[in-house]
Image (cartoon, rainbow, N blue to C red; front, side, top):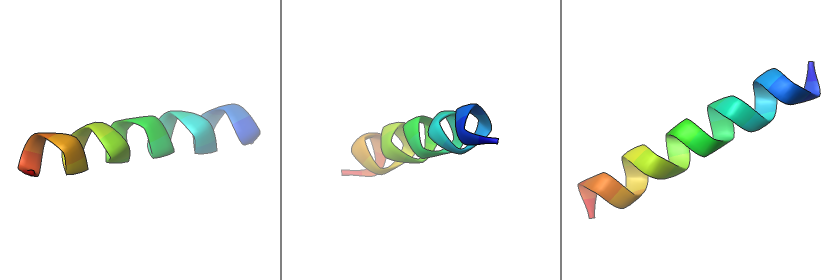
Length: 20
């Protein structure tokens, strides 16, 4: 679903920000 995709994208973005 689109909601699950957005949630995964948000968590992925947080991981990328945390690793920088």
